[in-house]
Amino acid sequence: QVQVVESGGGLVQAGGSLRLSCAASGGTFSSYAMGWFRQAPGKEREFVAAISWSGSSIYYEDSVKGRFTISRDNAKNTVYLQMNSLKVEDTAIYYCAARLLAYATRQAAEYDYWGQGTQVTVSS
Image (tube, rainbow, N blue to C red; front, side):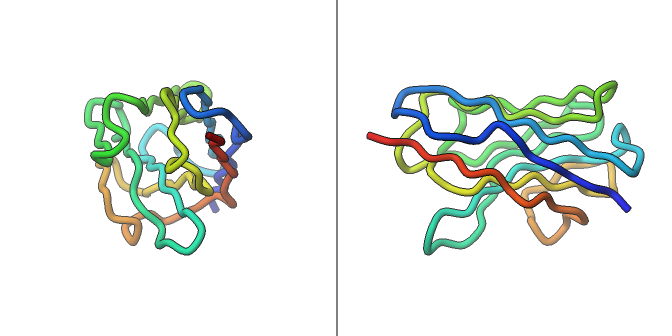
């Protein structure tokens, strides 16, 4: 059983930065693709970013390109989401997900384990 736990959310002003962390345990983290998704109030969960097992393949949702950076440290079983130039519309619960395959995907349905989420609130 793989467990995924997010941290690092909080309240920040527009234009500010946050770094989310996602720690995974109970499996072979270095062989998993990892993804970040978010869900804003009244909206469906949407893809944010994903990274392959080695970090060689990375994908971003268009609205976060150039502002967010996904990375991973396989020695620490952790994936990160560095969020810069935050906008009010980035406000959401951010979820980390693990896919028990090496290659990343934008599709939420293809991820096997999910964290409980961490709230990110961007104020104007």
